[in-house]
Amino acid sequence: MSKITNRTCQPCTACCDGWVSMNINGVEVYPGKPCPHSTGKGCDDYNNRPVDPCDHFNCAWKMQDSPLPEWMKPSNAKVLVVLDKLQWQGMSVDLAVPVGKRIPPRALNWLKQFAEKNARPLIYAEQKIEKGEYSRSQNLVGYGPVEFQQEVSQWVQSGKRLW
Ligand code: SF4
Ligand code: SF4
Image (cartoon, rainbow, N blue to C red):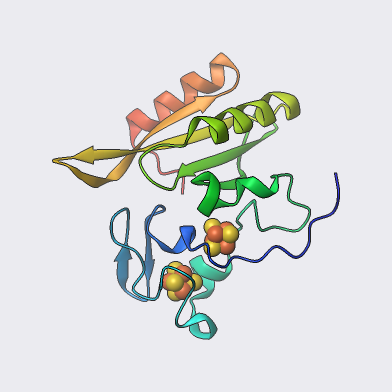
């Protein structure tokens, strides 16, 4: 795998557009409500963006030596991926959140193959829709060993926050 060090975000703004709920300088951002600084092509206040979550956000496509192929850019593949989001029984667990209602089949298949090949359990989300609008909650699915799938179901039922 060749080293990837210089991927650029533009024109992607997937992490700024509310697909992951966050608070930006006191403003709630969630599905259907992008960050007020997102122009749809970038950030209009980039130099003043908060350290957390903006600067700390570790986009798996953008990171140095990313294992994600070029076509998995979030604006194209319609999925945001964070590697090593948590640990389960000594294994790194990756997280995938759709840019839209659900992760398209091509991207989800790639993520599942990556999980299998590298023995990395995956948690992926689907946005819930209520009364025709995105709600602020998501269905979470565990992909990996049966015990992992069961544990993710228990986490969901107990309301555990994963991010
Ligand atoms: S999702 Fe990744 S590629 Fe897209 S704007 Fe955010 S950091 Fe950049
Ligand atoms: S402040 Fe800028 S970098 Fe941070 S979420 Fe908003 S648009 Fe994105």
